[in-house]
Length: 166
Length: 173
Image (cartoon, rainbow over all chains, first blue to last red; front, top):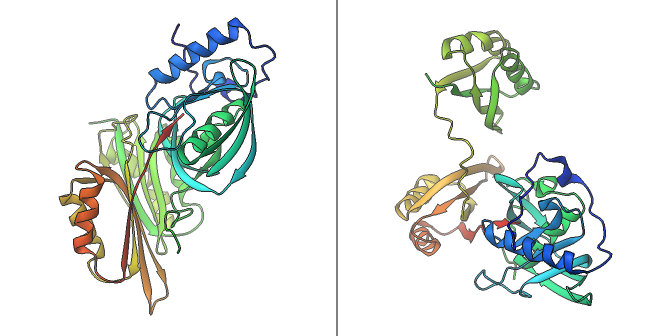
């Protein structure tokens, strides 16, 4: 196991698209173990994408289970993930290990369904909501060379987002 | 003398203020830092961090002709920059209601007492001249906890003022 170096913007490599994984072999499994260790070592540590450590393959890890009172799927190892459906919109604050010392508001779908391969190469369907759905969308953006900076909205947008109309 | 200065600048809004001011500073070798620029009422306001080897007097002389041309008022002061240490706010407070005297003072006093440190506040007057509404968005850190802030606010809020305290749960991915 080893901690991997996080690429930091303005490293332009963060803006490139990653390619699909073709074989789930031991080399990939070792990399994913290192990637998870790197994620857990970071501040917050709820998600990471392979391109953030300079490996431009479609792999991400999301684990929000350590946050209290949040619906979650546990630790999700996502290989070649695809979001299938998006529902609802919500503004939330995001930061990124690849963009230190900045946080900003981003609008994300509140609920998504997704299919990804696991470490055994099996297709797994996931439904994610709220904070977990946000984390997934943030990480999967990295696979397409997108940063949360590409999706910033102003504080004044969506002013009464949290008001529940009955 | 510190290298960083804060430029405060206010004037009736018109196109080109930002471009002209920052161009003069840039051409004089100054570097821009963080800024908040905003139209308040019909006024354009600038708070801009400027890094320069020039002193306040020299910088003031530099922008004087542009400032006069645009009819602006400004002020430079030496500051400590303290960059790259953003505090991540944990709480957002939204206040809105019919405009009445003392909303800001009461709300922010109650929050200060409840250990809330404001990092950011924006407020707008909306509605019409006859019937104005006041809208305020505050972000910051609730050092004694969000429930303490909520409780403190409950005591100062009168009918017709709506307050919403919510958590800013920043995702670092």
